[in-house]
Length: 561
Image (cartoon, rainbow, N blue to C red):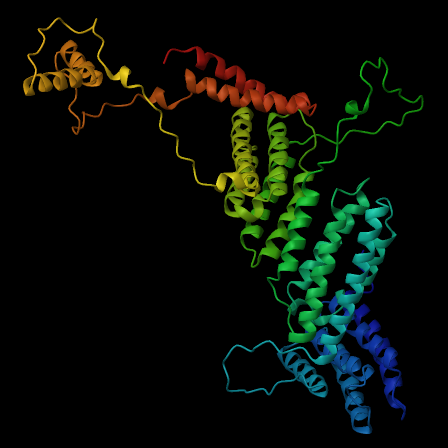
């Protein structure tokens, strides 16, 4: 059954009603109500955007800019202006009728209408038909700059109130809803895409508020995140008001995105329920009689694992293509949603290894690895995505799970590097090393042992006796030389002379595999991972690949090297 009213028909009806209302407002001799005139121009632009009519939407944006300048008393309303707007309304009617049969001539006509309306606010540039240069971005007019500065300051004020409320009453969500309502004014701004990083900051705030409304309790330090968001919007509002454009790499915006990423990556304030019980309590918790039963989430199958691999690969491409640090951190924050969706329990060993990888990735993001070693992190994400996409083609799930665990281990290395880089250096370590005090050796200890020396006739004295004593002391105080000579005598003088290079011997291929001591070292690493899983009360699904690898390492460790 077909829809009797298509998108183009609905747009024609809605835009026709809006143009009728605009024509009524313009026909009178008195100036139209500024707020009503601005609201109808905004409705016309929004309707064109919803109907996928970008050329009409751009022309309507020019009408909206004029209505805003008229409301702010920056453009006087006179008979010439009234006639100009009335002709523009008729031009809009013609363009709306041409929606079904749109062609290049209609596009050029809509562009002329847009420039004509922008000329009323002083935003239009002279068009040079012979110029082939790339057009430059037009500067925002004073009305738009004032509007962005005012609305940005109001959103920052709402964020500041939300921060104070979360600090005293973490369960209150009304200030967060007020922030979302306040943001709607800037969301409908036509020039919003030209004010980077303002759209990214608004997206980050909206995502954070959405996470806070879904969580039972806010993460620690979330009030600092809201304070940082308020500071970022205050800086953007000031830059727009003074310079016309915000700084895309402002320090306030980067501080907000870093705090946002670290606050929501890992729930560090969550403790096991067993730690709250009294020691020795035989029955620490009583289950209610009428306990609701919740269905467990569906386990991850091959299709879901491949889908998770696709998401990880796409997220890695988006993160590597980020144009600024703010955009990169916000894309890393969106990655957290993909990682949370990949932690469903399953009997598949690949799903268990994926859960370990997810936890390692979230820990690395919380430690700041996304800003310090983003290229390595993107490489690990792509490797994990390729392994998950290979689930359908491979029959050895244990091999894929081991490789995925190895990727998780390397992600843990990125986390360790990020944590070690942030640890403060003790001031004592910057001091110069103290020189050791010279030890005083008694002069008697330098004398040779009379029992160890052979019986020699006493020297007659004089210069000859002095040389004999010196030679005997040198021979007794050079045990290294004597030992070296004894080694040469024992080996028949076949020692390699220093400075010569012995002939290289081939290395057996088995020496490159886990065997003997190398297998023991790898088994020790796997044992630590199993201990960490048991500490957090993990399921057997996540332990299965680790246990299987540990069992495989036992015969390798027993093998003779």
